Length: 467
Image (cartoon, rainbow, N blue to C red; front, side, top):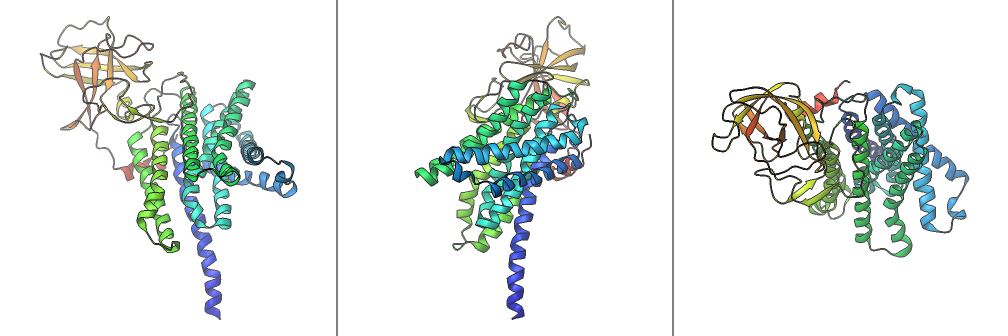
């Protein structure tokens, strides 16, 4: 008898422990990412966790309202009912708690990046507790996609709406309503396929495809808002950039860890015990998460630059914006910066050496020294780096402008150097309003390797990063 009683109590406890632990791991992945995305003034863990906790508390508003008022009995149309009860009510609840948190921490209100990032943290908190409630009601199988899509979906929608609150602070009332509505609309469109399947018999594959499409567009809108907020940041510095490679590797490792945990649970609970079926179901989710991380780390950071926010997906298939030698002709191309700018901006203001390819193909025959002075942005959405010659053994026309164009194909490591960029004359690009031309390159720029950390050491460094 005691043995059966122990089983009765232990298994529900272990199940609850798994739900809480898996949700906590999933939430940590994105809290980690949002915390360090502001490379100019990284968020403090205490602030990130504070707004995450406010997001958990925000669930009480719609739950409390639903306990007093049955919206379904007052709204006959299922689509309108979904939009009001989920998109409108939930987003307003999260934004109310965000405003409450910002009121308690007024020093954070002046930076637009804080509104978007902490809004996303509030959304994560709401999504986390919602996932726990769904798992307790429908079973652990819902966590595999909810801890991926729904969790980050809440973060994206609330981050978009939070930018509207910053606009209100600047007395831009029209933008307040615009961005809050866009966040609600994104939430509503994401939920639309599930309602259509229930009431109108929408094909499940079509519903999932529509859901993925809405999610991808939300990623692009959210990322562009983050990008513009960073460009308007009061802490902006030209020599700072997101450590793209390190963040992507560490985030991917955490995602694999999370999926391994779900695989173990799947094999325990599933009847067919098939790893192949699990991988088939989860591969699209991992792809979407990688797109999210890659897009959020491919930001074009130029002080004061406002990039157009478009309704589009965050990647394309095709040729790059500029023709750079040895660059692949056809590939899945992420929007935003196509290379790890972190490798370049650490030399901003330092002297770098140019190494000619040969006297026959090089504009300069001997080694020269240049200083990277500023970023130049082209309509092609590529960043160039204007350089000033410090010394050269051959006469240089200093009336011209010279630009570094990062070489982004392959590692190109030679000895203790990385062949990292090409230098173009001003025939290639004259100013920030013109596209790249066809000017012939003249020299390689070799950046010295400085014993970079492995991804897990870099992850630990980023984890303890201080402003």
